[in-house]
Amino acid sequence: MAAGMMQISGGLNSVFGLPQDEKIYLLIAVFVGAFFILSCLTGINKGLTYVSMACMICFLGLMIYVVIAGDGQFIGKLGMESFGNMLDNFFSKITYNNALSEHDQWANEWPITFWNSFFIYAPIMGMFLARMGKGRTVREFLLVEILVPSLFCCLFIAIFASTTMQMQVSGAIDIWANVQELGMQTALYQVLGAMPGGRIVQFVFLITVCLSFVTLADPNTSAMATLCVHGQQIDEEPPKNIKIIIGIAVSVVAYLLVVSGGVNAVKGLLNAGGLLMTVPTVWLFVSLPKIGGKLLRCKKYVVDGETLK
Image 1: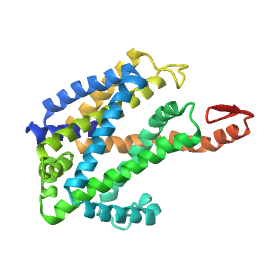
Image 2: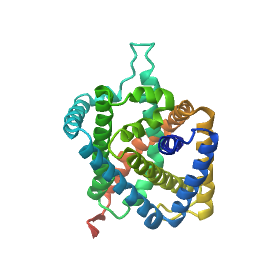
Image 3: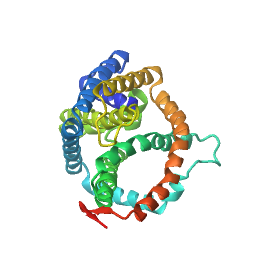
């Protein structure tokens, strides 16, 4: 959440020239926090459905625009090459710790931090995805919740990362210098600003980031509220007062993290939280085969909405 606030602040700085200070962060926490709490209160079938649909349309529109307005051929080549490199080096990349270079802190500062963030988000988002998947077949769940989002991430990274690298290498803009001066949260805004109609595209991306923030905070708030209610069923909406309390707490913690240390504070909390969440996550991995075995031994199961014996 704190990273999302920094991304929104970077957009306000790039589009409107507003400073990235504590007052702006406070305004973001209040207004965006109120937005995602309101969305959470309306339930999955209303607020989150509409916001996520709008977010998807904005992202797809931006991706298509960047491919058309940018160097589409370079994007296709580098994206395909990077995807092949990822498949070829998948296991070496996910276990990379840079043990032989003690003075190189890249692995500690970035890859390991991302791994810890996955440990933190996996159990909470797993609860939300389980709620979304109730009544669906395993095939439908894997297609909608795993395959399609993964393909979208590959396309998003290929398009925007390739465009960023092409602009840096060609000398169109010095993105690295801008990152050093204004922060990493402004990098993509600088890239979009260098394209035709840059200010408009930056504004659209800012709106998209806000919508993306809401689509992330809404289900997380709902899942955490579910954990706070004894006997709460996974397909039931938790009480609204619990949602409000959790939403306010999330906004406050995110604000305090940003103003206390920015990126370093966020990474520090991710590392600490990821270490703590490793235990329950490993426990879930151990429990998965047991639960799967029980389902296979069950006399009745559901296929395409029909109960079979």
